[in-house]
Amino acid sequence: MITIYHTKLFMKKNLALFVLFFALLGATTEVQAQVYGSAIGVNLGVPVGLNYKQFTTDRFAFEGILGYYGDLGGAYAKGFEAILLAEWHAELFTPELNFIYGAGAHIGTYNGGLSLGADGVFGLEYTIANAPISFSFTAKPAYGWLDNGFSFLPGGAFALRYILR
Image (cartoon, rainbow, N blue to C red; front, side, top):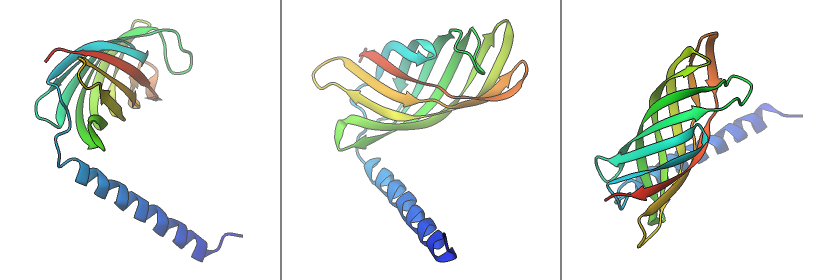
């Protein structure tokens, strides 16, 4: 049987982990986060398409994705989407490995209807030392309007990019 004591203890442990996570995240953002300026590549996941990333500072970038959704079932339908994300990068252990987090928006068409909404993004990006290649694994949850109402749209992808500079 769960008592009030156990519930408070559980909440204190979770709060401590939450504070520790953001303290470590804040500490990691004090160093240079990325080793390139811009890159272009493919987005393999939800959606499938092309992406372009442009850093404006050593820790902040804009990423654009032009993608296609196949018939995945559920809330998804066939269509195209344009996504713009604002991303912060925090170095993890080495300049080549970064934790990505941010937000953005999307607009698209699904089965001839309009989709419009907000996106979140978080994941990991790795830049290969001495090679013009970076790749990332990200989750990209979205909430937006489809013709039949508002829906939560889970997404995510593996992205492979060629570093331009």
